[in-house]
Every structure is written in C-alpha cells, then in structure tokens.
Amino acid sequence: MAKNLVQFLIEEQRRNPTDDDLTGLLDDIVIACKKIAYNVNKGGLIGVLGSAGSENVQGETQKKLDVITNDIFIEACEWSGHYAALASEEMDDVHPIPAQYPKGKYLVSFDPLDGSSNIDVNISVGTIFSILRCPKGVTTPTAEDFLQPGTRQICAGYALYGPATMMVLTTGNGVNGFTLDNGVGEFFLTHPNMTVPVDTQEFAINASNQRFWEAPVQRYIDECVKGKSPGGREKNFNMRWVASMVAEVHRILVRGGIFMYPFDTKEAGKAGKLRLLYEANPMSFIIEQAGGLASTGRGRIMELKPTGLHQRVPVILGSKNEVERVVSYHKGT
Ligand code: AHM
Ligand code: MG
Image 1 (cartoon, rainbow, N blue to C red):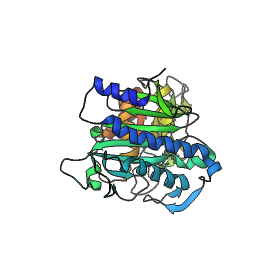
Image 2: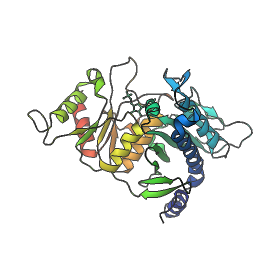
Image 3: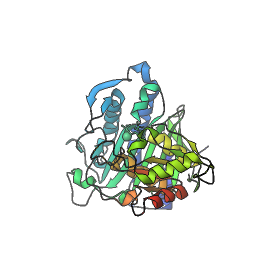
Image 4: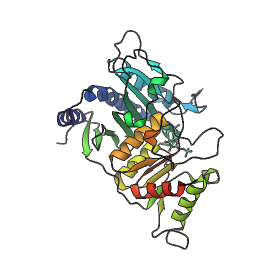
C-alpha cells in the first residue's frame, strides 16, 4: 500500500534532516484540510453555500464557506504550539496565538478557500498555505514579520477539493501529491516527484481582461491564439480557465501549461489580482520545485521583498520554455 503523508514526512526528514518539525507543522494543516474537505463536500446538505453577507479586507464579498474554512484553519493551527502567528486572505491583520496556548517558531499564511467564486456552482476549490520561520527574538509577530521573500519559505502546499481531495506539498526537495482516502481518513502518496513538462501547448488566462493587459501579454496570447497560422507559433494551443488557481496549478503539475494572472490596469493601484503571500509565493515554490518557472514578467516572484500582507502581484507560472518566452517579451518594457 502507498505511504501515508505522515510516513512520507518522517522518511523525508530522515533523508534530509533539518531542525524544523515539519511533521508536526503539517499535521495541523492536514487536519484543517480534511475538515475543510468535509464541509466543501457536504455543500448544500449542511447549509454552507451562499454569501456570508460580509466583506474581507480586499473588499470582496465573503462566502459562508470563506468564513467557515478560515475558522477551521485557525482552530487547527493555533493550539498546538507550532505557530507563532497566522495570516489569512480573509483577515485584515495577523492572527495572534491566544494566551492560553504556547507559541511556536513558525508563521503560516494561508488562503483557506481559494477560487471561492466556484463554490456555489460545485466546481473545484482549494486551500493554499506557506510556512516561514518567525524571525529570531520575535515573540509577538506583526505583519512586518511575515514580509519575507518567498525564497525563505520552508514549506508550501495546497489542498485541492476536486473529484478527489488531494494535498500537494514541497519542503524544498521536490513536489509530492497525496490523495485522501475517505474510508481510512488519511492522505496517501499517489503522485511522487511531480514535474512540470518544459514545453506545453496549453495556456490559462481570464481573456475577458484582455483590454487591460500590457503589450507583452497581448502579444503572447495573440500568438498562441493564432497558433500555426500567419503571425502565430510553430504549434497550435489549447486554452483552459477554471478560475480556481489551485485547479490550474494542479493541471500544470500533471500535464504542463502556462497560467497567467498578469499585471493589468483594471483597478488602479492593484498590480494584478493574486496575493503575494498566500497565493503567488506558495504556488511559485511548488512550481519551481517541480522544474517550472514563476515570474511577474519582470522578475522572479519568490525574490520580491513583500511590502504588505495583502500585496497583489502579477503571476506568470508554469512550463519553463513558455514562461521564459513571456518574460523575454517584457524585456525593455
Ligand atoms: P479568491 O482567493 O478570492 O478565490 O481569488 C483568487 C482566484 C484564483 O483562484 C483564480 O485564479 C482567480 O481568482 C480567478 O479570477 P477571475 O474570477 O477574475 O477569473
Ligand atoms: Mg485566493
């Protein structure tokens, strides 16, 4: 029988010893994701669909499940003594560890339910997380302590709530995928050493934003759409857009592709839609560990020095040769 997630982590720790208790850190998150999977899967049966009637810090209307899954994630991670503070897409500020619990050495930032616009229509959603070390000597972390470049992540991953529930992880030694066996209640290793093919004929972008894109992205997509016709490429392309980043990244890990939520001028002052700390950085870590690339178009996402907890960044990630092409189109712009 395949290894379960805990067994995998313990063996990984033996192969690549570190001072970090990754098994304990991830166990909290695994429990959170199993509970979230349960709620997402029950959907309309337990009355969790629809709007919560509130807005998050980004001014987005929260779904009931955005709020429920945020609470589940916090409850699973705050008591164990592993974390020093939490930060979420759904909370304005850092969530401190309540006084009755011990504080740990790590910070976790997360998006409890990414792609939540899909939840009411029963399409795949996910949870994304990123783990950093808490700076030495800091006992009460603030937002400032989370503003570390993505290169400092010690672990990143996502849970995908699709036809099967999966957990995909990196601790900096490649990428591995686990599938939840609902009968046993455990994740088992089903996708060892996931790699992104260097070439692809599939792109993912929300084309309704086309008029707001910059010239390099306009050029790249125009060429993909033309395919083997004049002014196009040496090959034809296929397109996908799920509007769930977790589902798009998972597809790219399985069969290659390029995903873009690029810089656009849709909303003044926002450099794209996706958030650096709990969407772009963890997904970039996973994609790079699988042999792909992740860029803003003008630089490596993981080398950005964050300036705010909810900072947005352009995201272009996936198969190496296509990301390099888009980056080359940005040169000199
Ligand atoms: P969310 O965290 O509020 O769900 O927003 C992030 C999601 C991504 O999963 C997805 O790539 C993108 O928003 C889709 O945006 P759009 O609806 O503009 O296509
Ligand atoms: Mg999100």
